[in-house]
Length: 74
Image (tube, rainbow, N blue to C red; front, side):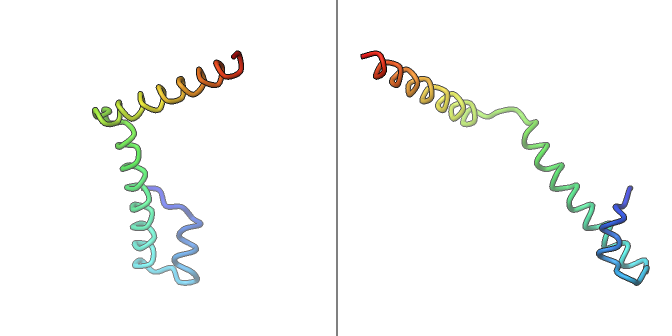
């Protein structure tokens, strides 16, 4: 496990005890777990609700653009 030197310096301060280093490692592990959760949620399969919401936004956008075009022409 790599430990960021800046995080260690900020959390440990002037003391270089093992407990402070463990605390810094836990903070880094927590950040990694947040990133892992976000990447897992982005990589999972889309649900029906996700698909309907995405297609709904596309349909509304197309209708808006077609309406603007029709208003400009007529």
